[in-house]
Amino acid sequence: MQAQEGKSSFDVLNLPVSSHINALGGNNISIVEEDITVMYHNPALMGQEMSMQMAANYMRYVAGINLGGVSYAQAARKHGTWALGLQFAGYGTMKQTDATGVITGSFSPKDILLSGLYAHDITTSLRGGIQAKLLYSSYESYTALAMFFDLGINYYHAEKELSLSLVVKNLGGQLKKYDTENIAMPWDIQLGFSKTLHNVPFRFSITAQHLTRWHLPFEKVNDAGELEVKDNFASNLFRHLVFGVDYIPSRNFYLAIGYDYKRKSDMTTAGRRILSGFTAGAGVRVKMFGIGVSMAQHHANGFTFMTNITADISQFLR
Image 1: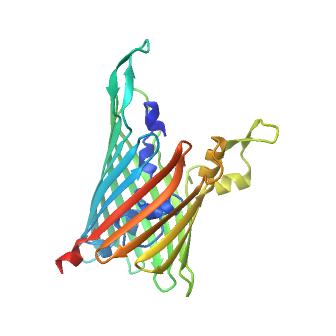
Image 2 (image 1 turned 60 degrees about the vertical axis):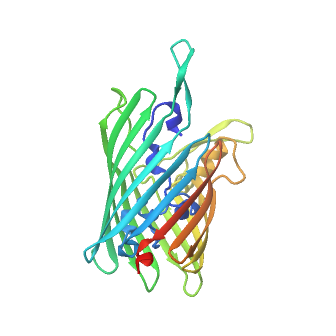
Image 3 (image 1 turned 90 degrees about the vertical axis):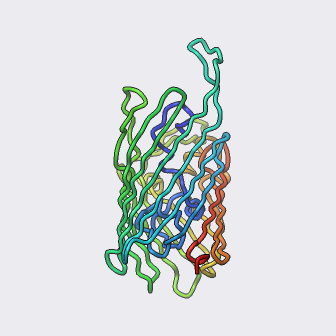
């Protein structure tokens, strides 16, 4: 993760907030759920069914990195919904040294992300949404401030249980730079497809990401023990795709698995092979509360564990 190298390209913007989506390969922009945390991945997935819902999320990342946050959504008139969210990423405590390598102290790098979202029902099947994100980063004596926007649209056919989405993510730039160096912004275009089978409680999802560029080459050790660059058509195609499958026997329970070939190939290069690229998780809803847990390998240094807790305050007030 580049945040540990002292300079960030704001990769924290692309880490999952939803435990359910984390279980579906780490990215999904098309599952339609009554779970407020999916809005961070596509603001058009937020709707009035999430009104007065609160959520708390936590991820135990690698190397002592912790990520967490809180969210709240509220209906706005007849066809709109707004939400606020706060996310925090702490990267542990690091040693501070001078030019000669002498330890002079310590520092705790961090990212703080404030989000404001709005979604509107265009028709009964079509919904659009926007997310504004203000990111503050602090790394030792370097600080930066940046503003980003996500634009999303979702088409959902309730009878066919078919969902199609398009999202343009992380449009924006720095308001305050770390220094004079320009850092590339992590903007992206993504497409999503989700479909529940007829009379069978399985939902299949495919998410296409990194659509701003086709070539996503990577290095792989060949049979001779040498590094070779993989950049063929099939490799590039599958490095753009994330696959997910849900088993949903009722609206109060789900099991989910996912696969990200890009993560698999990246981790294989780093020496991780067995479960690299695979994710899994589960969720349950009891009355006004919902909880989800998931496990994934986002980094070569180990597994990450994530949990979400949601509460529907409107049920408490009835």
